[in-house]
Amino acid sequence: MAASLSRILGGPGAAARSALRHRAGMGLPAGKHIVPDQPLPVNDELVWDNGTPYPEPCIDRLAPHIGKYEALAWLCGGLGFFATLGLAAAVNDKASKVPYTPKVYPYDNLRVELGDRP
Image 1 (cartoon, helix red, strand yellow):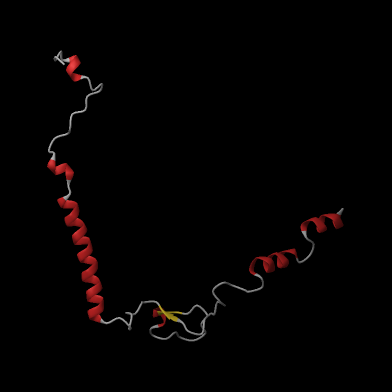
Image 2 (cartoon, helix red, strand yellow):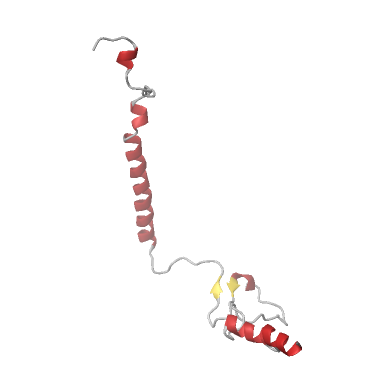
């Protein structure tokens, strides 16, 4: 009975085989957790060290390949697009051209109900 139960549950080392199946033996997804044994550098919180050879800064730097005048042109172009879109919506505002709600009759036979001649 005990032998068949261990065969059903996977036997000894089943947890290790299961972990290897899930992670394929790669370890933790973000590298090893290193406990510091000496004082940290002054600006250590500004660098995200994810275990790669090149740690990334936490605060994004400006893109060095885009000049300030090109960035200004893109900003003005985007704001100009939305200003044009808002102006077009204001010009084509149908609700302001008809200040009242159009009447809707339930049977569309008002002439007959009011006794008007055809």
